Amino acid sequence: MPTVGDMPYSYRVTARSQAAPGAVYAALVRAATWPSWSPIDSADVDGDPEVQRIGDTRIFRTGRSVSRERIVDLVTDRRFVYDNEGGPFRSYRGTVDLAPAPAGGTDITWSAVFDPRLPLSGGFWRWYLTRFMRRMADGLAEYAHRG
Image 1: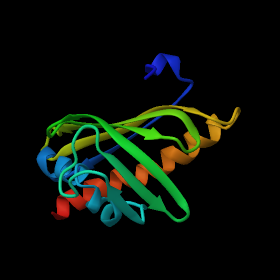
Image 2 (image 1 turned 135 degrees about the horizontal axis):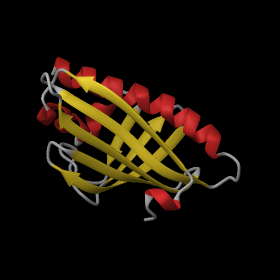
Image 3 (image 1 turned 90 degrees about the vertical axis):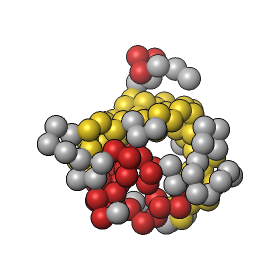
Image 4 (image 1 turned 60 degrees about the vertical axis):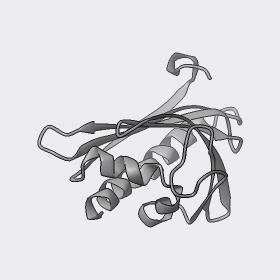
């Protein structure tokens, strides 16, 4: 996978949850929770539906759009990394970093580097993904807090 410097496009959004990092991480590694806190309509997993592991593929549906994501790295209570396989991207690596917030709770940073298949579509995808992932991060923060 290319590094950030090799790819022309990226986004980064942040959110803060009142929940501890462990609660936020627990929601991330259970694809079945994602439709509860995000714009995603449904989620399927090719591994254990309760807790995903490195190498598992998750299939998310939002409207008529389907995305396949393979988990490539996990650091308990700290980091969740995935590659989007196919779709409108030649390559796409998303990372969710979790850090204890100074006043309690968790700071969530959701970012990605990507290379779109269609020339000149990168600006659109950066704009769209920044807004979509802001909803994801905010939803995750609230869901983990509600427990």
